[in-house]
Image (cartoon, rainbow, N blue to C red):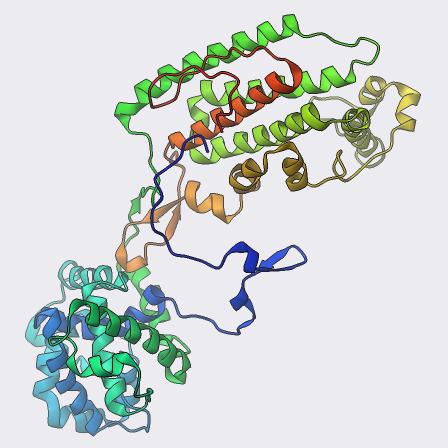
Length: 521
């Protein structure tokens, strides 16, 4: 909110209009498919590590030849009908014939498995291929060096994390070639990719290479997903869990993708402009209080509207004048409160009936009555957060008059927040501010991962999240959303309630400007 960003290309997901609503849940079209998709970095990166290590023996584009030579040797002793693909879990199936295999192909094992990968695998004694790492091999290479071996492993993991990167593409294509060689896949002859496959990788254009690689990724995903030998994920589970014992966590602060935290150079300008705007808003409210007229016979309408506006000013000032609230999560909490009040103010100012104002006031009084009854009936020794007892609240409500108050456990308007926002013309704020910032109020996962957890910079830990007390970054967009929402409240007050039009505010990190009655959201 507040300013428009340049549009970027992004992944296209199924539009909301194509989702099916069931109760309070929106179901995408694929929700009915009973499929648990594998996660590339979690489930497949550990499987491809040996193939990837061949990239340290030969250039990545040339690892097909040594990989095929090794797998042809494996195939001689393969004990099952399913063909070996070269994933690490396959070596558990070969294990019963280990002696025959090593006796005939010991030199090949040393050259293409142990040399690039053996010392790394020695750190994983329960791996499916640990039987290949013999005592003699380890003695020949001397004492294991974690800083060296785990450093190589870390590099492989980082390169493989990019599922479309050069290394990940090469290893996938190599394994895909073994699937094709096995004759387990059949394609219609008229598929364009069938004519390109024999020319891959050196005798086809860049576009043709991209076509083959996209086809291979999709095909391998389906093939491996249906292949029962890899469904238990024993090796990937062990690999990631064992890594926690091999390397310590490294806390890192990584900004959200696409976000723009405020730089130190921008901070001084931002602080100055926020102070100017805060003083302007405070002066405006003082001026308004002297100019507005009340119907003293029935003051409810004016009290509710001007009270809501004053609340919006207070929340706006709290954010502007308290740097401790500028972190993304705390700004979100105050934004959520601000947009809630803004929706109520704009709705009542533009469309509120006499009964709406009565309902708004009665709802608030009923909440106090409910608290009074809880203190009276259930918690007689307790007090409210202000230190008041049930009798104190009863006196405020008017004694016997409180008996006449009905307690509504729903919403004062008989509408939910979304429909109220629609009626107030604030549906955009509901969707882009109210709903997302509810995560900050309630502490759901969306807020925790961005504000209370830091990324572990250790690649061998899958960049998992660690609890942190560090202040999250300051994003000027959040403060601009606060300002845009306040300006929307002000413009509604001007058009519907004849509030003073002049409210000079500076833009936060752009050229100075004066905000008047026009829409700024």
